[in-house]
Length: 210
Image (tube, rainbow, N blue to C red):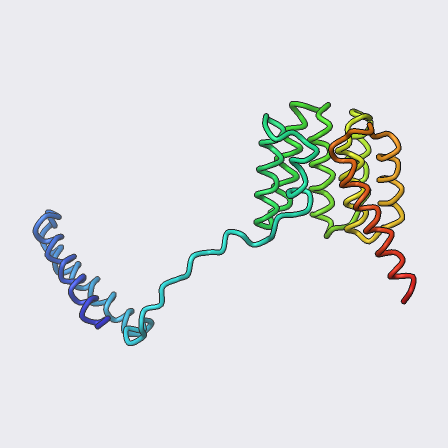
C-alpha cells in the first residue's frame, strides 16, 4: 500500500510541474530523474510494509501540583498581577520547567521588588528546583518576604511548609510556633497551622519510637 501511495504522489508532482510549472526545455527529464532518485532512496531507507503508528500526544501534566500551589490561595492573593505570576510559575513547575518558574518570578520582582508574595513564590521555586530541599537561596527569599511584610502569615507558613517537606521537622516546628504566637485569635488560617503542628509532633514521636 505504501508503494502505491508513493507512486501516485510522485506522478501527481510530475504532472503538476509539467502542466503548471512552466519548465524549460529538458526540465521534465530532470524532474523525472529526481523522482527516480527519490524512489530509489525510499526503496533503500523506507519501510512501506510497516503499519502506521500515530504518535500519541505529549502528556502535558507531568508533575502534580505542589503543596504550595494547593495552599497558595489560602494565604496569598487570589487575584491581581502577583497572583497571575505565581499561577504561571505553578504551571511551569507542573511541566518540570523549574528554571522558567524562577525566571518569571524574578522578572516580576524587577518591577515589584517589595512584593512579599512574589518573594514567597521565589522561595518556593528555589525549593522545588533544589529537589525539595531548603537551599540558602530559598531560605533567603522567604526571609526577605518576612522582612517586607512581618505581619503577613504567608512567608512563615510556607517557609515552615518547605522545612517540613525537606524533613527538617524541628525548624518547621519553630517557624510555625512563632507564627502562632503572633497570630490574631480569629485568624482563619490558625486552625490549619495548629493541625499541622499536631501532625508534626505525632510524626516525630513515631520516628522516635522506632
